[in-house]
Each structure stands twice: as C-alpha cells, then as structure tokens.
Length: 375
Image (cartoon, rainbow, N blue to C red; front, side, top):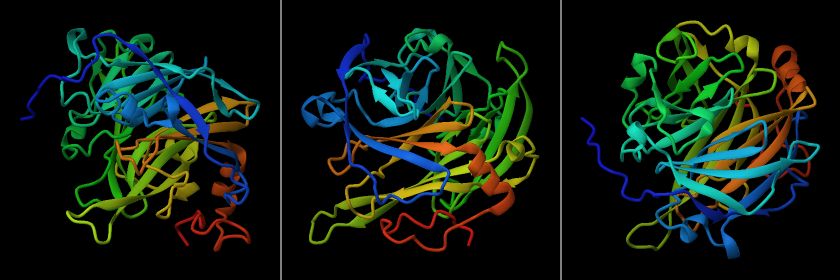
C-alpha cells in the first residue's frame, strides 16, 4: 500500500515568480527533415540568470508537463505538485514569445481542495480540452480534471482503464494526450525491462460527466530501444506526436565518491491520424522520427525534455513546443524548444515515401542525424 503523507513544501497561496527566456543560440547548421523548420531554443532562468530552482527553493522541482491555451496561456506542471501560469504571444511562424517575465506559481489542489498528497503530487503531464485542464498522476495512476484550468479548486478525479493500475511504481502515467475528438491516450514511461515496448491505452468518456469510460483499447507502443515516453500531444490535423527520451549516465573520472554526468537524447515521433484512429486491441504501434537532438556530452539544446505541446496556425502548419526538467542540477537547464512542422509534408513522407537520410548532409552538426531509426 502507498503511504499518503502531506506535501510539506506546498504554497498557501499562489505567488509571482520571475522567468526570463534567454535565447540559447541560432542553429545555422542544424539539420532536420524538410517538414521541420524555424527551430528556436531558450533557456528559462530566474532573475540574474540563476536557475529557477535556486531562486524558488523547494517550490521549483523541474517541469514535467506543458500545454498551451488558444488564448496564449502557457500552463506547465512540476513533478512536486505545482503549476506555472505564464502569458505568451506568437509571431507569424507560431514561435512563442514570453510577454512578461512575471509568471504565477501555485500548488495543485486535490480532494476537498486540499494540497495534493505526497504520492499524488507526482504530476507528469497536462492537456487542455475544451477549456478544461487534465493532469496525469504517475505514482497513483489517475487523471484529474480542473474546470477552466483553475488549479486552486478541487478537481474531479476521473476513472481510467483498470489495467493502468498495473503500471510499475513511479513508471506509470508519465504521458497523457487527448485527441481533437476526445480520445484519451496514455502509456507507461518504461516497461519493467526498460526496453522498447510500452503498455498503452486509448479510451473515451461516456458523456460530459466523465464518470464512466467507453471504447477502451489496449495496445503496445514500441519506442526506440532504451527510450522512455515522456509526453504525448496532437497536431492541428489530428496526427499523434510522441516525445521519447533516453538518459545515459557517465561516471566522472577521478571523482570520489562517484559522480555522474548525464547525456540526453530526444526524439519526437509522428503517427498519422488515420493510423491512430484505427488502432485495435493488441496492436503494436511505432512512430516515425521528425526530430532528433542530443547534447553529446556538451551544453546544447537537448536536455531532459518531459513536456510537449502544440499550437495551430494557417491551417497547414503546427508549432511544436518542448520543455525540459533540469533535475535541480547545475549541469542541466530548463530549456524551452520550439519548431514548426509542415504536417502535409510529414504525412506525405509517411504514406508515400518513408524517406530517411542515411548520413548527415555536408555541414550538419555531427550526431544530429540520422532521423530515421528503421534503416
């Protein structure tokens, strides 16, 4: 049995914090498929360039989920049971621009409007659907619905497929997605062997009361070997996006007691709508890479990305946003990465060509290619 204890680091009331978005660098040599462009990355820091954790000790544990409202609000959640609400505006390419460095941080509420329990505050993903926010809890494997994204009010705890309760402890509902048609999808972060097959579920709710589920489908999502699934989102045209990450620890030479540095590999996978809508019980599903980056032992744009969100514009393109957890480590960063995806181009590649690059084109940064793993 999981022991329920209070979240002693909670905030009694929401407070303002300062978030600065510092552009990391341009990417003139960054290589990506023809349907991905306008890539930008920002380091999110506190005033003076300090980490958000240092400036907001015990209140800032690292980003774990991300979503955007139609009006331009950024909602992020942190895996100790906090939320961040920041205002954005968007340029003609869908790139997000932080309107003000002032954001709001508060504590997510649970049953009775009380602070989430210690086990319940391991919140990992967030989605907006028809103006309401839905949050997944990894350890206790449930979904909470916050009406009008008001995280200070008591949420509704929603039923989920019963087999989700079998996910391994602290490796459960790391990801949550909601399709344009209201189909929910979640899967385990890793399977018990930390390999490539992840138990996954689709389901719908019987009506707007969200008290009963229907059309439950269990299937397997196959990531690249050793990758976890840390986020799920959907594009403007209903195509499925999955955020995969791989963490590799390297022991630092000559340091006792042993200390480790971490490398992070990040992949965004694409599954077209017609494939997603026809998933059947017992199917095995994989995605096609549209983006692959890693830090290669250096301070670069890839970090521990856990959150993915999308925004539509001009009827063809989807802007995709990633956010990372710095694990309260001086060697890592809170990174906000964004890029534009030509959905029709990606869809054509999937259906007709399945085109991959066998080697990095001339002038490209080493180890950012190949993007396709099925060669």
